[in-house]
Amino acid sequence: MKSLLITIDGPAGAGKTTVSRTLADRLGYRYVDTGALYRGVALEAMDRGISPDDEPRLDALCRSLELRFARGETGTRFFSGETDITDRIRTPEISMMASAVSAQPAVRRALLDLQRKMGEKKAVVFEGRDMGTVVFPNADLKFFLTADLKARAVRRYKELAGINPQSLEDVETDMKRRDENDAARKTSPLRPADDAILIDSTEISADEVVAQMIVHVEKRLASRKA
Image 1 (tube, rainbow, N blue to C red):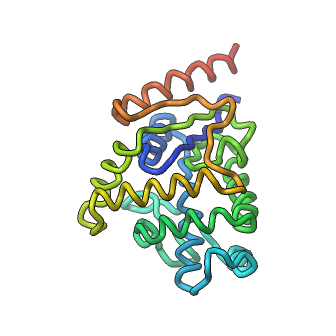
Image 2: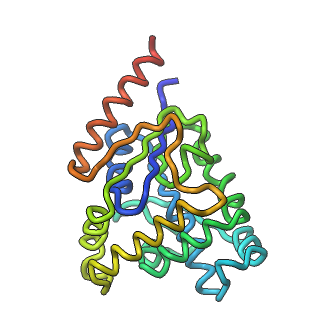
């Protein structure tokens, strides 16, 4: 009863990954990057020449994949089968492909059970885009982290410095397109859950965001003890 299942949703570049990892570390909880699951499907689809519109082949692909997280000396790594794909999934091409394949109901269905199994024992922070609305509608605590487009683009540009040859303007354009795709898709569109706590990170640091979240976590835990 003292462990919570926490979801953190929001658009790309809002700081979800940093905040989710930090919050999980502070609480001693597990951290699950659900976006990596969709990126893993996107990478495998791209390697096999499967179109993001080809739902039957994507369905078959998802059934054949073994996606998993494993902790190592350099932190948590992401695997497809026995292959470490942690670094390969962090490219602009995979980001756009992930947004496209995630719109397919077959892909979302395939990953839904996997995510729910990961949350069965609670004491976990899930980062994603539909964690609080679709995957865990009964989560103990839901956050929706956002920031304005320009701030998010600058963060992503700095994050990918030396890896991504794109200009800041290109990063912002791609991010805007992905925002539109995520919000417009028929299946699990990006939106805050009705009971989510909204936090705007445009003008505050990741540590300040986490501090706000900790306050809400402590209140929820205190209410459990009462």
